[in-house]
Figure (cartoon, rainbow, N blue to C red):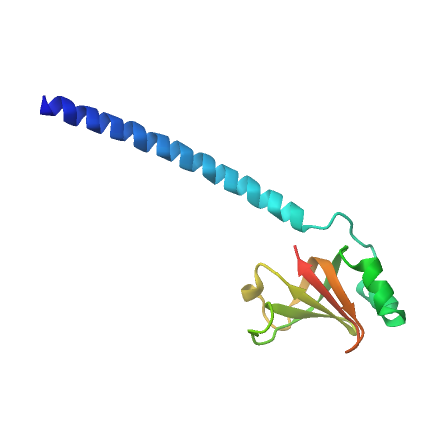
Length: 142
């Protein structure tokens, strides 16, 4: 009788473990799908075709108007990486020098893989424009 109970327990345990493996596999696929959806949601609905220098020219004329016009739009910038020490006051970011202008990049996934002085192309959503220290465009990478 104990053999029958042990056999049933082993059989039920096997079924339970098999079911858990299938659920885990399904959750893995769900997480992967949600991750790609989340990446799509981070990208803005519209992207400007203006260059960094064109955006900065608009910001130098009127920063308030430029923030209204470009804030929330996507953009692409290519330049030279300038890293800094991590600050505990704000989110981690790095600077991208594009000619005489600067793009401050936050939320870049592979920031620790960057090297100072390397060339990089970044896509991001414009969060703020400033002309206080020359032109600086703040973006959240996507």
